[in-house]
Every structure is written in structure tokens, then in C-alpha cells.
Image 1 (cartoon, one colour):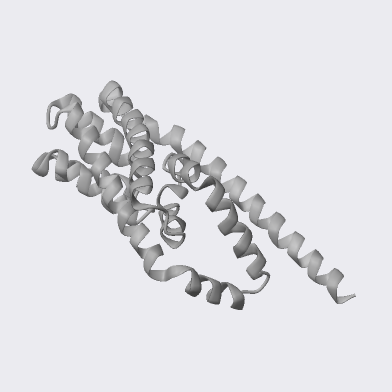
Image 2 (image 1 turned 180 degrees about the horizontal axis):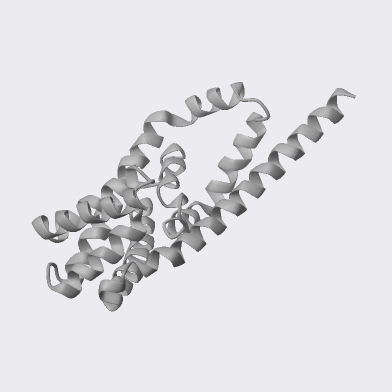
Length: 207
């Protein structure tokens, strides 16, 4: 909790000194370093707007721009890594087969637009979804459109909540924490199912 409040104080200071661009910078860093909590930055930006440190439109615009800048940086990481490197790494990993990579690529080819758009509104995946988009070389214009729209919705909801709650903006963290914990549980169960299924299949192939 202490680290969260320290970060909140640093973000508040950044917004006070730089206004909207400060909030945008904080969000860009949040995209690149997911442990930095957007559920602190965005409501705090809304609170700053309520106090008059930045306009409400400015807070939404700058934080959305920051989201897009951070997402493009991760898209570039995926593009630089490339499919060949990822396949080479996957081939060396236990329990992973290249067929799994092929299926993932086929899935992203069919659902990439929805994945990027909706992924911007899911904790953990908000940042990570940009990397497979880069790996698969999703058209940059499409990526920017999906990222901008998804980020705009996510940012607006939390900024307006912070604006409306005022000094009570920290209450939002509890709601988002429950949402994020649910996402983590689902991901953990999916991972356990994958590992169990792959181990069972490997044992059957050895018989």
C-alpha cells in the first residue's frame, strides 16, 4: 500500500507541474511497465481535473495519447522480435509445440482487431496485447484505431469516476482490484488446464 500511495503522490506532483502532458507521460510509462497501476493514474487525473489543475478534456486526451504511445512502443518490440524468433524460442520450451504457435497465430489473424480493442480494457492484457499485434504485423493503422478507441473508453470511465468522486477517488482501486483478481484467477486456471492437458497427452504418447 505504501508504494501505491508513494506513486500516487509522484503522479499528483507530475500532473501539478506538467498538467495534462504529465498525466499522459505517467500513462505511457504504465503501458511499458504494467506494475504501475492505471487505476491510480486515471482517477487521480480525474481528481486533478475536478480541482482545476487540468481540464477534463485535456486529462482524457493526454492520457489516451500516452496509452497509444506506450502501446506503439510495445508493438515495435513485437515487430522487432518477429515470428521466426518467437517460433525458435517456442520450439525449445517444454510442453509447447509449434502447432500451439500456429493455432495462436491463426486465432489472432481471425480475432486480432477485437483482441486489441477489448484487450485495452482488461488488466494485465492492456499492455501485453500490443506485442502479439507487432509480432503478427497487424496493419499499423488498424492497430492505432483499435488501441485509441479501447484506451479512450477505459481512460474516460476512470477519469470521470475520479472526477465525480473527488477526494474519494482511491475507492476505485478496490473495484478494479477485484476485477483484476478475477482476471488473474481465470488466467491461472487456463494455464493449469493447458499444462494438465499437455502432460496427459505426453504420457499417452509414451505408452
